[in-house]
Image (cartoon, rainbow, N blue to C red; front, side, top):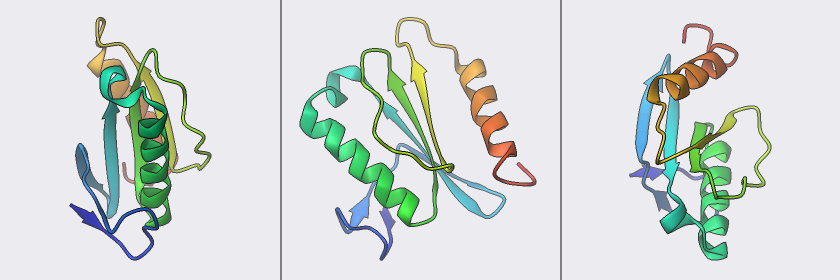
Length: 107
């Protein structure tokens, strides 16, 4: 459970994955098309991302192929298109690692 005074949509959020990266919390969310395609879920995903960013977290969203991108613009936000039928975990981790190098000096 993540809780922060900066959250405006909810008092708490859960994270799929959260990890400390040199003193900064990185939150990784996986958005499967089955659960995240409805317009109401897209809005929740967007608000959650904005709350996490407002709290100072780094946010990565792994969004399945059919999902539209979220309307989130922030240098601490990364969205990666993933494919459930053709996972490429090493390539995705490399992309996240490269992105982090530009944000966290010792990542």
